[in-house]
Length: 239
Image (cartoon, rainbow, N blue to C red; front, side):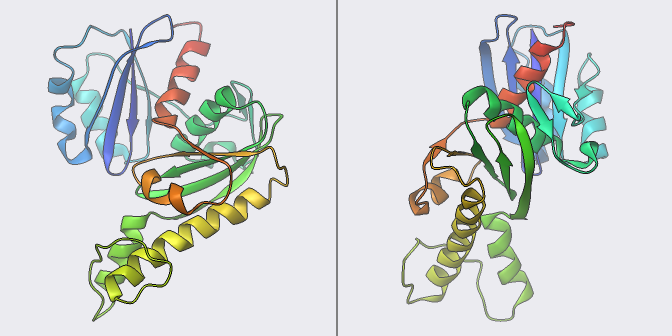
């Protein structure tokens, strides 16, 4: 059994992967409760490998390692892996979560696709049909945008409202503005694929808010990062 860990800036997602490639169990917990990870796994079968992706810093990686009897193998983006070729100038500089998501997308789509993770940050990445990662953009996630307005202006609230096409109150204007900005960035990047068959694969906690605004072919996919970690783990002959 392999434990896959997606350690993000807000949550830790985990999945227990059987040798067959099927998930035995999956779950999630707030990053603030990282010291309870072992307790969350207490009723699960034993595992002999931990393959993970960590974008929450070295301290959290150390706290996770201290709880587990197996030393985590934190993935580092490669120049080429699992059918994906890394277009970053310095391959290892790419975020590990983005790399895992691109690998997962490659297993889900044969043609070109836009790979979007909408969490604390929103990442929007171009993946060609031949497996070439062309590059992508990073922008603040929806909650981060809204918090920035509330914390850095004198009169704007931490908005909580529904999206409107023509907002007539401040909360709606903020919520709608962050959604429109994010959807616009996604659609602009999609256009750069220049292929009518391309699909946008959208994952992350904010996906449900964004999907209704998109006017491009889109599929929501749960746990893109975990799926990519599973591909990486199973491609290694140690698994």
